[in-house]
Image (cartoon, rainbow, N blue to C red; front, side, top):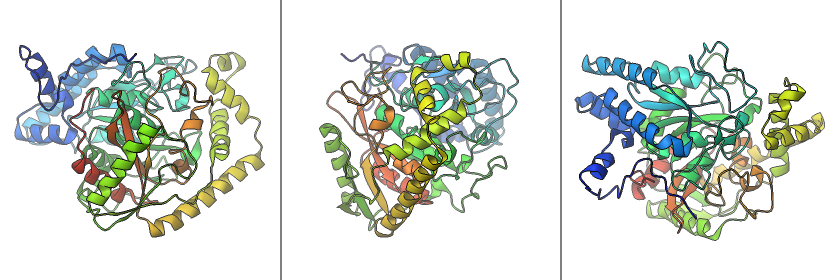
Length: 489
């Protein structure tokens, strides 16, 4: 039996109810406005950052007890930042492109003045927190109002969000279900109107999984486009990306965070283009491959039907869509070698007592990761390189690839895999996402429909390395053809 989220009763977003004005007023709340609209309203003097921030804080206060999306909320710091932004807008001198926009930070990213505990009982909160990660630093420089930090599984190790430190995070569309992970708190917050912008990280699907399960937009950019610091123990599998309700908000956020930072030795140069300005690139004439199962994956029939219908929308937009599977092998074993050894590296300094405090599933993969040899690791890397070469060839023929973002809709919260799935580990159901971490390609999840039980389904849009603007433009075209941003849990 599903349990409906009642943090903010929105009614029908297209025809708000007016029960003594309450539902109608909530439907007009600034908490639900995209960042692009907030900024326009600030510039016209129709709304202040203080009003927007108060609306988001109210949404957090009402909704977070049920969702457990935030592990830290600093209302006073948010209000102080909003008041400063209000003064700047009144004087016509905004600090930057995100001045006054309420934003949440995944509790993996260093944030000055706030602890970064990574969902772990083994992180001491009583230490100096004096540094921002690159993403956080860029957002702060552009005036974003930080509301708080969002939940993650311990060290972001799995594709659902629960941890020994924070407990279980839940899906706004159905509280019995997981929002996905590892950026599950971020996805739940955005989906529930707790701020239009959220940061996420993605080492095997961790922005796309929760975007699909929670009905929002997210993109994993080309590796290196958004700088990382501290360096992830999961190496070059780990990406950072925006999580938003609209493609335009994600583009705006990418224009801010896709800038070099000296602390990331593998950073790419600043893009020579604007993501926001690239959104209107037409998809007419593009050659697009649609792969229903990547040649070998099992997909829920309802999900398959919804995604097939979404792929057909690109034909209506003038693209040439052909069913074709990319020539990449089944790579689960090789991904797990890379992922499990990364988990072992991330926990190598822990003593025996600390290891006992780890999430039991994390402890299991750490132990398995310690059994792999250097030869095993290099073999997995060789597979990864051959996958990258194969996808490079594939994209000489096809501009984009469409797949389901996930083979199933959201399942029971607190589980690593769906009941009756037959496999224990999250990697067994993430076969559409982790291959594109291995190849380092840009990949986005776009909401494309709902199951009969009201759970969101995501369409994955994959581009060649450095093809991020085209992925974003395609997602924007789909968003225009099949609007979803007005839909709310």
